[in-house]
Length: 238
Image 1 (cartoon, helix red, strand yellow):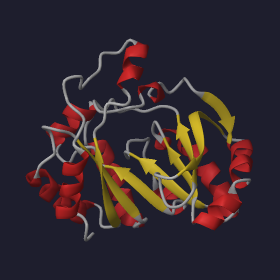
Image 2: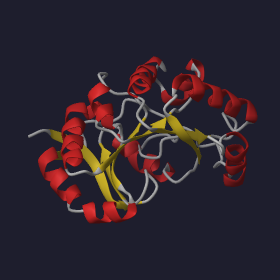
Image 3: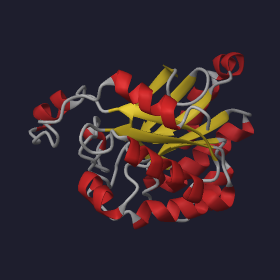
């Protein structure tokens, strides 16, 4: 029996992969992204302890909804790759039940990603930033960690959707999007699409409740129309 820590679970998600999905939010994350809207998921020793056997049984009960909609289960976070053994055992049980598996990740775990990628049908990969300086500024860690995940992903060629949060004054311009497109072509050849996610302010109340200074308090929410325009201009044909 493999145990892990989760923050929460959503049984009827519609935005984290295809179809109707159960989304399991894993507890713990090494990154401290300045645009994070789930700071309560950072601490690895918080959350609720569950075992993969009981959790998989709950998820398998939702299989009729998955089958009808083309959905499945998404492991999100936090960062699922920090609980690799738990994640692998959970995905093994789901694959035995013929359930579609999706990994929503920033690619910053503990290494050795080959087995989990072999059990994953779709990766939602949050690139955060594409150069060392900006990545460090926005996430607080070295970009080399997620580059190790990219290498494993490139070898496994698991179907991938690239996600990029678009932040006013940081990357909301044509120059960045052109660089992102080339970056994906070179480093993430398994990418089958791109999602540009507009930066929003919905999580700021969590920082206040936790007594943490809001990292981007002076940055406005990203204009959704401009975000859509950037997508149509640069990524609609990917």
